[in-house]
Length: 152
Image (tube, rainbow, N blue to C red):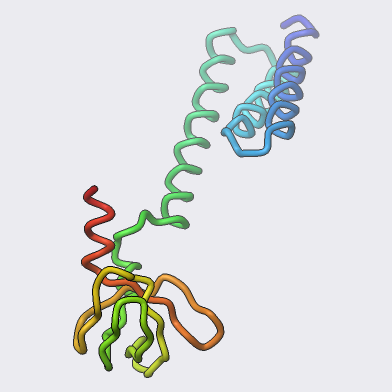
């Protein structure tokens, strides 16, 4: 029979990890450690387990939960420059002077747009990136300027 204090130690570990998680403004993955410690606490209260098996269960649940959360988060928040960015591309209908206004075709409709690119004009037929919206007016920037910023 395992000592009665082993489940209490795991419960204390769970409470401490949960407290640390809640005290921080960002998610650091301690929640899965707290959950794992709680599971080990319940399992050890139901029956004796060797110390290495307790630690193994704790590590497996913590790592599996953290890996799952990382993959889930990556799917929800894709990196810039991936295929989702194609949804933000528009085609210039009427040319823009540097920092000027004109019209673009975005999602099949004509929109008024202002250029945030102060260095170069935008020509008709050019692809631009929609970076914002002010009411019914889009804010666009040249793809060339975006590519120059990312390579610098």
